[in-house]
Amino acid sequence: MPESAKQSLVLYGKITKRHGLHGEVKVFAFGGRPKTLSGVKKVYVEVPDRGEPQKFVLSGIKIQKNTAILKLEGVDTPEAADGLKNLHVLVEKSDLQPPEEDEYYWSDLIGLRVCTSRGENIGEVKELIDSGGHDILVIESAGREREFLVPFVSRFVTAVDLDGSMITVEAVEEFLE
Image (cartoon, rainbow, N blue to C red):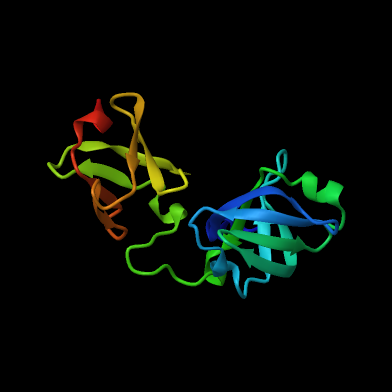
């Protein structure tokens, strides 16, 4: 896969288990919106010990609450579907609908600098965690050699500036201790 194609992939979700007897898999959508896969023709799965994600053509998709049930071409048995359990699913960003106002792709947030509302630089976003109720920013601070967890909700995250590569968070001492 060309480098530009790898950079255009967005982490969509995680395969949680097989579904049925024909190799379908259930995918938990990290953003909580499985409908964003409507119209997508292919996905990529991060397979261990492979240098790049494996491309799968979608031959079917059903939406069920906050999961998507996918039929991947070439995955035709329950055993083959079981082999994909717990693997990440990626989608080409250009295949997805743009996020709505005040919504972001996780891939756009990872690597952003994080400052407090007082201007203190506390680190950068290393990853996000889906806690079920809301996302949590995992902020790695090189200076303090530790991580901070901050809920990605308006009470704590006061601004996201993608163009300026920065997130502003309310200076809450229990997060920064």
